[in-house]
Length: 248
Image (cartoon, rainbow, N blue to C red; front, side, top):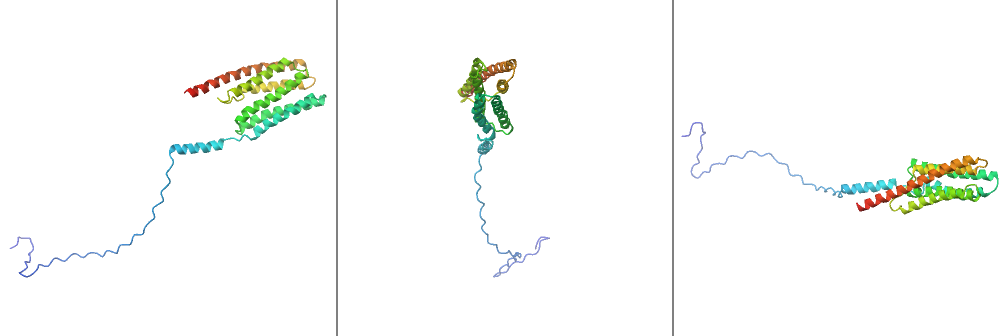
């Protein structure tokens, strides 16, 4: 007897095998598609580190910002140097017309001093060559004028000696500290140059009263000596800063 609720169980007789239950139907599986080999992506080149990228960018910026020495501002400075002999020759030739010609050349050369500085600042054409050559060209023009006028007996020699000694001293000072850095022309130095140009022009022009000439030259002398002392102080400070940087 079977328990209630259980289905009857067929018992195979002797010599008979109990038939296995039929397996459930299996859905047909499509044949596997052969795998197509896919090329692996080429390995990317190792990326440079942050420090390497920064160094490369800094190098590119440095190349962009580098200013060529052969620019319009420096060309005007060289032209001013070339004009100095022409001015000297005109000054020594007798005649009022030659004096006026010398004055015109002198003022033209002085104008290039203002122009090349303006161009260098406006178009970022400032170079180490310009920082050195510009004041040298100024000193050559002023020195030639003072020496010529003193030789002609129009400016006392002691005035010429004081001004030239100051200019030569400042130039020598710049070269002595150039390994520590370049001392650019200061604003006071520019004012000094303008006052010297005005005073010399008054001596070149014939017929100017002596009192006017002396007043202009006296003011130029005071500023010349004062700015010379300022350059000495700046040179000493530059040297001290360079020594502190090396020791640190």
